[in-house]
Length: 235
Length: 227
Image (cartoon, rainbow over the protein chains, first blue to last red):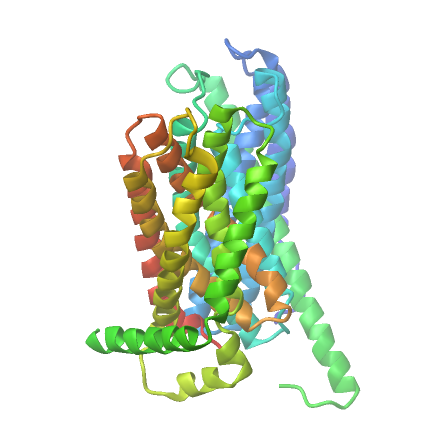
């Protein structure tokens, strides 16, 4: 454990996120054109989609660290996996919040069971919420790390499978006549704004990730020091 | 690999032999499935005939998953309670076979339950109904494919849960989200066959699910198993 310094607190991601997100928000409100189909309300796209992508990024990172833990058995990898999944779920809940708002405004209903993205997120949200249940049902240590990693590993398979399943549900169970306006008619200003927001959201994610990881490491260190003060044996 | 299959078969046979002698789990799962189906019948009683047929196509999948969950609750109970798990870990065998053995045994149990469940579903929901019933062949094929996925994913999470506190409470929470794609594909195949739509895609997804979960669990089990 290295001593506290600015770099380890993730000052750079914080600075990037702090600059990019307000700037991109200004662009969202004042610069990008209205969507031909949905008008002003489509601008929630610039929050909803980057946050969703960052959520996927962190869930993927969580699975990657889980695999790494199983190979190295280094407790820090377990902690990284846990914190990454935690951030993934937090960003995922933003997706589940902004999605229905967008759906209500543009389709007139809060939840569309034919919407692909939103329903995959719902399944993943349930799956990874259970991850925390599992994690907190086991005492800290190698056993907890191993079980958590095993469950996180299953998530690697679940993401593409959920995508395929939701796509099938969309066509067979819930035929949706909605035609979505996305694809080639995107303008350069939209792309730039989207890219900036995505970078900002990713930076925010990494900032939160490193702060939480840091906090967890400090907790762990405090616990050891307390135990040592009480004269107990410390590994 | 031949050692893996042999161990899998021996462990599955051990479970099935124990079950054949006590018949506790089979009876409990069968009665549970029957009771759930009766409840489903009353729960959908107010719906129009055509709607009830559609609802039944989904409910039968729900009953299968919940019944499987009941079986999974006891899946590693004997191993954990009687200290068999430690013995298995000490034995020089391919550990993935512990998972595979459980999965094979549960697949057999599920098949047994479904042999009773499917005719009853027909009797309760489709017999004498003017609504289009799903194709029996499609439903059986989908159930057969889903059994593998349910047993594979279920045995994997049951093994994880068995090492945790309050494992009985934990298992459903871990199991249900993991098998959501299976239910979606199964229902799509069942409903699709009733409506005369092609069902290759959902059936293929069931197969892909089995393959993905099988490979993941088989590859990871050795690393995630804990005493």
